[in-house]
Length: 472
Image (cartoon, rainbow, N blue to C red):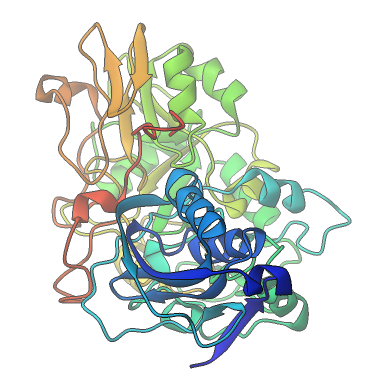
């Protein structure tokens, strides 16, 4: 068994009477920084042993004196990483480990696959700071991510969740990224999707025929086309968006005509919460949802009209924030909000590769911005034309509590991957997206039978407050 990292308890702690246990943790525990968390916790509590991802969850073999081991187990259960959700935590007595250090070991794929994968997570604050810091080596890198954010479900081929099992396997880490990946104190310790401009996927700007458009700054070039009324496609985490200026009547009308969507509302991406509040009426609950890590489409009463063609005659508008560094960089050059709708033919799944996009929707788009990382599992969000994002309906008086958004007025949040709450509000929600594509986080079983077997609805635990932290 290969060792990836190890730490050693002090001699005085090794000399005390020791106890050993095996711990099996299931739930959303892969792709959320759980092994690095266990490693650091073991080091802090003078624990020896090992931790590994397996197809059945995270398994820990731990030994230490009783006081340290009890503290280690309690901290594991009570304060897991922010993105983790523990379904079961089983502790059993065990023999003493072979050595006196704690190690992260290579994963095992020999057991039945019952792991719950997390959804893709919007860019975290740390990565966002790097994105706009001229002194950082990831400055303006459109695929920046770390253990706390970025792609998960959409890039995995198989379990356990390790880089060779993902769409990042063709991109070996450069020396700098590899040093971060191996450093237990770095937030990119075992961040399987990590990369940088020197070793990660590159952007490509193409016309509808697939010819590459050579330009020094493809993001700025494309934004200028959007500002001038063009309709473009941009690759997101789980598929392509079709994008146009949401304030341009002619551009939105052309998008409806080309995509054959005469009436159904479009979701609108805005640069930040301030722009969202300029176009929609938000209360505290709505802003909480808008800024949550899942970056849902929040459907609120309209304050200021985008193009009259955006909302299909409704007095509500669906707004959401950028959730990838690429979208954030695009807004550095855009003049206002944009329509961002899933790239698909009506009643078909979202398109996940550029070749298919140009073949199927070449007559819809004027230009396409894509990157080299493959989308393995398409992510179409909640059913409805939400640009591939989960959706929530929020009304004045809504208050958040564990289990979703609750409102005295009867308007409920919609939990992605699950059932819509309060069906009578169906008319308030943009519709028209494919019914054939599984919601984001659910497996496309016809393509990958047996890979994901259980807890499909947990793949996207968005819009649900954590029972301990009361955070989304």
